[in-house]
Picture: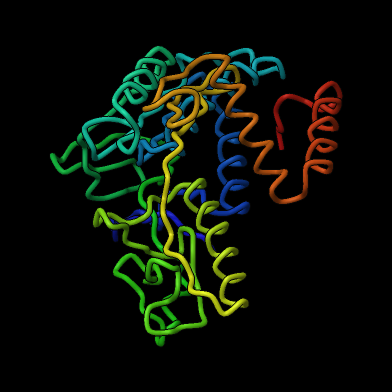
Length: 310
């Protein structure tokens, strides 16, 4: 079931913002963007795009939008330049990528600034209107297209599960073995569940955490079938990589080549980012199918357009 973005009951957010939680919402964003770019090519006005949440999703989207502007010029949109695009990234924390190390956040912030992305840090959105985002200070950050990429909560369907322990963030409350609290034979994991670590903090809503939980749960089910006690989940942070458009990435890796963690960026980080995606495909379909898919995608790049215009 996964998780969805959390609007924190901000007035107007559900009505005016696009939440990138599904294929339908991603397609909606794509169509709105292409329609706006078509109009922009004729009027040469200003296109404002506002993104709430400077986590990995918000940062990657802001960087990729810059690449889109460069790509559309190859398809007859000659009147559009990056100067016509006004990208605003809004984050309540004092830095972008607040869950990642300071060095990663600082480098990503530098790259986004060079791309022309306007950063609004330490800014809380109190209301969303047709014109844009109203902040706690009363300022309105104007945006034609508004995206909400902040926070994580459980899916709406959990509101109907009255017999399950659901947290204020609409996630299922589980113990350290991922058992639903109060029910022995039902398990929940990933973004739809809340598991509190010994540190007192919940497992972070990240792909590597969900993958580790899946591995532990599989092992526990095998133990249970053998009448052996289950083992508690232990989360290990292996670092994170964030894509900064087509040719670059930034991140940190932990506990791999040496003790502690180290910083990576540029083409090397981008290659690591792609390899992690390949590993994810392999975990779903197997290495052979994933490799065939990757090769096919490479070959089709010569035939397919760089940008989907419809």
